Length: 136
View 1 (spheres, rainbow, N blue to C red):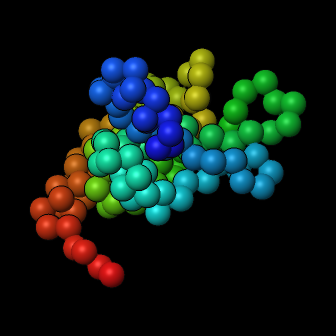
View 2: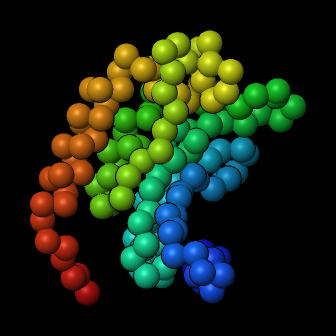
């Protein structure tokens, strides 16, 4: 990712946010490596890193017209990500995810968004209230 960032900067664009969306592992399973958040920040000069949590919960099946998802795990992944001092999250929310035209199986029900954000914000504020530790 460092090379991509450098190309943007060389072109005069300093408004860069890095986004983790998961990597394909095995048979169409998106996986997020929590260690990758720190690596992205360190190798890219401390640029803000966000996490597209609902995208990373998508599942793909060969020949399927649309992706599936693991909506029940959206809070777990969001909290784990925020515990790594992320700059923020990206997620899909919908009043009725089962009726959504896109990404419904991984979308957070809109009625749960406020409670979700309250929990995520609490973890974010707690983690960021501590000074970073330099562990060697």
